[in-house]
Length: 426
Image (tube, rainbow, N blue to C red; front, side):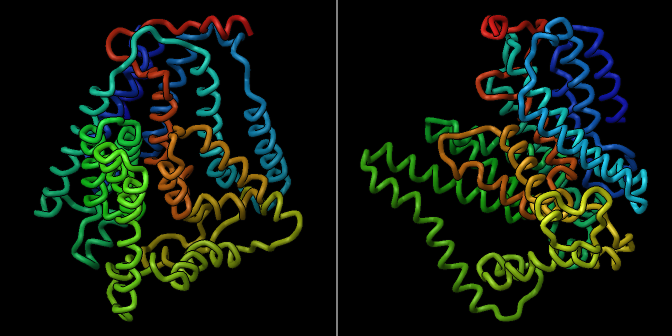
């Protein structure tokens, strides 16, 4: 039902003045439903892909007269050239099937289209912009819906499927995560760091904490801790006007957690899965072993060999990873991806491909004055193959539209996008 509504909205976006509201409506529908959480949604394509196509059609339809005057960045040309060469090489390899090509090309094309939209939207201006309070209303509504679905699942009113269902069966704990979870956390995190008043920053920080608790996601927990340290330092700094006191206050939570984590790890030589997920973060040997088991071994078993050529260009499209834990889930252990964007990029596309994809993500995410504000995203990509995760792709769409200083998501009647005077003079 949501897929159909998104497709219809995309068509209306092209032929009417609906503007960019299709994204807001689509995200609301995704956030107010437990899609990606209830077992067996049965959707053959990613909803984030449908949203991106709808958004792209709307942008190009509204800006088609100005498109010839929009310069394409040199990096975008390098991006497509590199991966087109990868596709050409793959077509001459007999072991690479059409399915392999489609699976690897889809996320690459997704990121490429986002980069193209960034170039277009940065050269366009919209006369009416959405205010932060409307974004806050959307985030609060979606988080409230998450809490409702979490409680419903806890009382057995919803069936928990996928990895969350397996985790619930083993531990009795719910790890709630739908398609909007990372987008909600990301927006709350960004607006928190953008807030100059401690009270408003605390509002967004509170939402980050709620999402981290619901999802039991270690990366979100780290992001929340970084945000809390920043908020505490900012609050103390505004009250005391003493930089050293602000610095010490901001550093205290991280130092205390690190010390407590080490002590807790040493006191738990043998523990269950829940405790192990915590102790793993504070034991370097356990962390390295876990990363090797999850990312390196699947590639080596899959046939990866480190050579001068593969170091720079990778094994290419078609490389399959052997994921042993898929077997007890009844899945095919030979998979086209592995749970790390860094590992996936290096093994398939080499160090050059890794740099290209990382720089692409850097162009899509928002920059903040404090470097650590984006640290949680890179930690997320360390343990998730972001370009193959629908929720992360949806997050990238939202950031593409809600660019800093642009606010291209329109509230109310949308005006046709026009090139800015600066663009006309180029």
